[in-house]
Length: 338
Ligand SMILES: [Zn+2]
View 1 (spheres, rainbow, N blue to C red):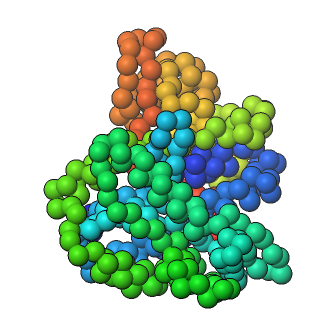
View 2: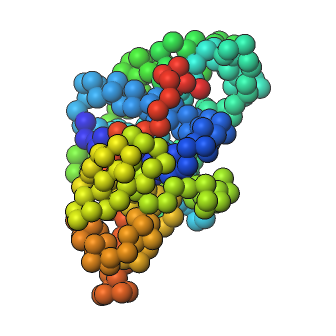
């Protein structure tokens, strides 16, 4: 298996940034937290599937996680894509709890959980749409490869009901524990290898080089007024208390805690919430400091790429790998399934 670890998307990171940035009285907004939970549940489900896949015996598989590509003006996103010697496999991952019912006559997907019935988009049709999108995209490179799809319920406690007992559906909508079985089944259907290792590797790199991650604008999406946000570098312990800069340290006037790196997350959050560049002046406004020299040293310490000189210099947001992964929004564990 060749793959990189799944990272939190810009979307998840932006929600976490906004949570940190909101003043205490605005943090516990139900709409905002509900949206975050939905994306976070999806991310956990995908991680669970990554783990199951990592034990698969077949070694010559390249895996791409969260791939987003563009056909003309339309983007399409694939949760997990396998590039195997025989074919491509799209995994559409759903992290639902309760009872799931699939009606193959109505093409309808219903969830019963917590006494509530919810109808969702048909995930099998969704996966088929991704398949058509990917096949169309590959035509740009004169590539015509077989593509299979699997819809995976990542929550082991979920029950799946195939109402018409449609044999097709048993092979398309599966529990994550049976991924290995179904991949073997799919591979057995191919009598020849379509891609050797080097072509698999080329395709892997080609797809990654065209990946265009989604970067949301949550400030606009939720219409958040600037005065809802904490200005400066808040203390992690004393919410809403802003730390002061003394020489190379940030010191909290409340609990006296000090930090040499508290500005880093604030600058990363700025990239996630506002724009992907920052100037020295914007940095001073963001951190509530007056010295250009201080701001220069703080930014320099983050090793960001830049263009321009002196006052015109703009520093760029770092690659997504540079954002801390363990800085989520705290909430109780019973919320992780949708
Ligand atoms: Zn404090």
